[in-house]
Length: 176
Ligand SMILES: Nc1ncnc2c1ncn2[C@@H]1O[C@H](COP(=O)(O)OS(=O)(=O)O)[C@@H](OP(=O)(O)O)[C@H]1O
Image (cartoon, rainbow, N blue to C red; front, top):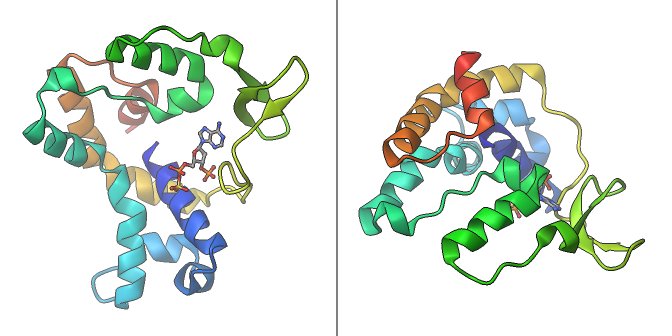
């Protein structure tokens, strides 16, 4: 989901020793303006642009017809990966694999992981699902306001395409 996408990128780049991410807080990065130093503006854009989902969808729709595109809700993939994978398999018309059996929630990792046996799981590496402090409230507030036009456009686009509007997007727009 858009705001965690931004924060995740900031944390990702920070853990790779990026000097800008290490010298400036997430809030300073996302609130950088056009008179801020270029490296700060560049990082801001790298954090903020990927969450403008309607923009990218419109571009894909310029190249492909709607029925060729499957929209996958990342929050659903994280919370209920088997449900998300079922829908994807149906869309791709590929033989059904039961991800309910293939995946298992790993409380230590805090994510669903590959079920290796009854006891064991094989999770993604350290760089996926990192542990970091929660986002500051003021950043959440800033991002919610910043993304309102993008989220409104996304909701309209999904309705136009006859696709379900994800729960997070419904919540976001109704709590406006
Ligand atoms: N099963 C499972 N295990 C681990 N991580 C999971 C999983 N499902 C979803 N995620 C989320 O995926 C995020 C990493 O995805 P990306 O590689 O696209 O992000 S990034 O390029 O590193 O920003 C990663 O972001 P971070 O939590 O910031 O590490 C997770 O939130």
